[in-house]
Image (cartoon, rainbow, N blue to C red):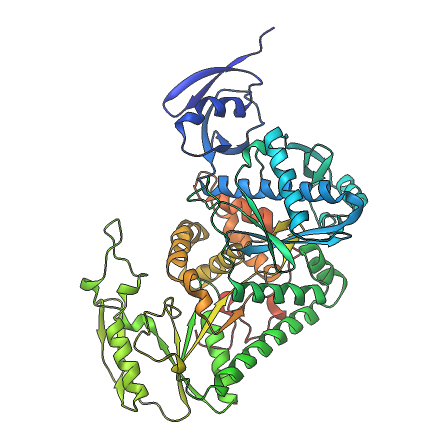
Length: 555
């Protein structure tokens, strides 16, 4: 007997489908109209996985791997298939832990702990097993179980990070994903089966390997593996430090917060950062020809506070630092380049008067007195007042700007006179061994808190502009990060526990019918894993104070 028939609107077309028809079946009918693979569906503006079925009249819209949410779903699903393949090849009894750490090149760096030899032969077998699963189109199934059952089940599996994580869950149910007998937990939606996961490559790297995957812009192409070794070493060192403190995951951090003195966690992390800043100041002091310290990093990295703290350490070493902002060297507003939409492009290098910048720095290097401009953002022109500068023997300029690592910005200056620093908040903490925390999430949360406090900007506005900010970073900052003499990780292992109460109210204020609601919902779910702590434990000179306020620097 036929089931009920329902009207489903897809674009301008309305069709009838029988109750119980999966959205995957409908997606397969419409796939020819899309350039990239459909992986999720919006049903009446609510995001759903494709295994869900039609049970009422509805309007649907498909999400592909070329969309942000769809691309993240692809990578998350790939992690599940990878971990299963490792367990299949090595056998469960030989695996203690598979850890998915952080981004390297266009993939994820992973390590395996257990009774195995990680070599090319082993990795080839894992990749072959993954391709077998793709060929078989192995289903990815979802079940919901009680949180207490999930704790017991993952304890039996030896996945103690998940067991620990779920002890802090407030909800009574946990969604479990499985491929055949293998079960795992993932934070976010999945594709329906392994047949969707065709594009990947595994590379041996350092002590582990990299799962290389397509980018959102080219979701059917696996890009060449191009490791950024300096950045990788900073990330590796940060993870090693967290491991030494017994804080590998959010569950570990929650244990520290609830069962021991959180003040010690804060003070030890802050002491580590101060030690790193002092070491950088020591390197600068040892290079007698250095007169220009160039600092660059993506949004919400804490560049301003870092510059102040570095200046203090330089003074402790007998140097006299002077801050200069590259923004004061903007070209006149009428000369500013336009982007592809005809709008002023303030982030491109051509928006900076590079000739004037280089000429004045060279004059300072030659011992001349220079009048430094101040850019008037109201009139759109540079102004020259009384900001005169002349460099003495121990004077150095501390220069901050998005292009500071681009060699073209300081093209006429000798490398011996420059010391380049890349700073970013490189989150070393993961939710659990298979669910990583993207560094962009940490920076976005920082920015939401700061924008609300200093600019009166809503979380909705910050989220709306975040993609544009990220595009500018991809173009103007990330390609030059390996140019740095040193890299500084500004992420604090405890910071999300502090930021949680600040940002939650902002995110809850985003209405359900806004395009930004889905991202707000995702971040709220993510923050729910953390036990929050008060800001009174945060020192006044902490980088975190740049975002939550109450710091000792005038910024």
